[in-house]
Length: 211
Image: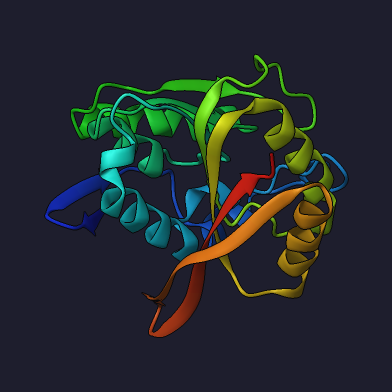
């Protein structure tokens, strides 16, 4: 179990191990186009920046219908839920959602609705979310097109998307695609997040659809 400090609260985060440990147990069927690499077992620097951003914007969360894309261990969904948001935590991996549920209970949070779903084929009511967010979800170029399609479908008119990402070339391609599809982007916050003895610069991007 890890303990994560977010503003004035400590959050308990249970997980089955770290990525290095679980990597040794992967078989060849876990790789390929439908890969099942358990990136979700680690709290990446982007996740730490995202939960800080959610706390800073807690006034926008109360009563909002929210979608946490690639929710992993569920920390960001739990933080938002504790601030009165109505959250769906979406992930491709059933084991990730099992631990997300454990973490909601461990922190005495009214559990978000955990949904296992492939974001390439979203079974989501159109224009149903006030806020959508994700941390480090553009780490492969092939994710950009289906994620943008998900955003186009799921976000309610006037809604916003918050994306926590480190600086990398593959993410820059996603920003270009978003703009080409009629989205406006602005860097809402930049934060240097310490991890394993060094710092990673994370940007929170806020996206809105042009009218």
